[in-house]
Length: 427
Ligand SMILES: Cc1ncc(COP(=O)(O)O)c(C=O)c1O
Image 1 (cartoon, helix red, strand yellow):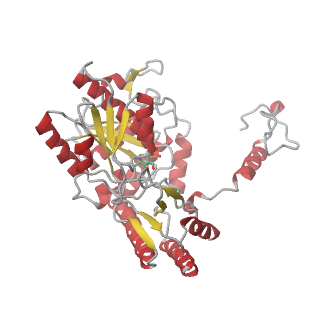
Image 2: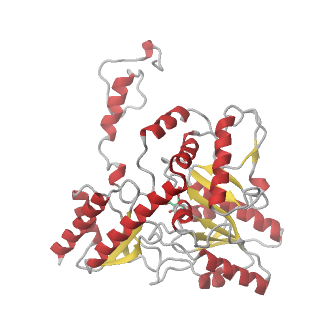
Image 3: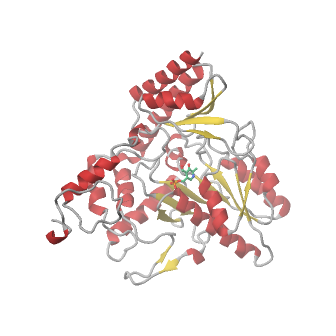
């Protein structure tokens, strides 16, 4: 059925670019589709974008669910209690994966880890204000040089000083020594990353927590730890069960992850879980009753589609524990294979070798130029970003390749071969 009365459609010639602003008349749906598709067919297809951590494939069955729930408003719990039930079940399942006490854990579905970070940061800030009363001002948040920009955004908007451990030749990872140096009575929390956007490496969460325990024993300052597991939150539980990084570490008060990264949901979904209600500061909840319900909402946004949450639940049903483990084990194994081929060229230094996140990050010395390598890969249809490391290492350029589940061993071989060809021609 057309969304427009016929009189508003103008089915004759239609411009594909709306340079003159909103046209007076619209057109029929088929013409509109062609016009828009004509504008969109030029960029890099997401599956060839080696930069992105985001899910780039969706199976037809998931697509059907997605379409069916696209027009359901996630916040409208009263109208769509069945969606709300799935959301709560997702929080419980993720809480279990992260070794929370499922009778106490609470959580929110957000639009992505960036929103989760803003909310987690706000909760840490409130907690610190409550602990210290009005006695102190100038709060700070401690993080490593590899922390994602969303944490600096939180600091900027909430008036918190970002205390960033300087990068060094060892890399951008936050270690216990920096935590010891940077934390004081104004520290609202420490953010540990599992793993880094820049090189895919996990930060040593358990060691950071031990350092914070020592600080508390020594000085009485109790600094909570948040884990930004944007990508690792849906990888470590399956591939690194021995690793201590989640709610099994008592100091960890909250954890975020992106459902739309290794949770394998299309863009638009993040998760934020708090150990218990006391860590999710009640001041952050907003009560609205005009949609019918009277529950507090713990998000920074309001209306949005329920489809990503429905798809997260679909993925839990579809893959189960062994399915998630198989998908991520395959990505890690392909990433390691790619890393060892790049290392074998003798001209690339590995910052990330796929052992933590399935990310291969390399640097190069002249005469090998990473930007030229990126151009060579682009000729083969692969887009791979080159970027500078944070301050203190800003002269170091890095190329990062994320091995997602839609890359095959043939693709990885093609990428490695292209790199080998480039190095051979530059030698
Ligand atoms: C460690 C880390 N934190 C936060 C983010 C932001 O996540 P999102 O894109 O889901 O907002 C990213 C994105 O890559 C990330 O790698």
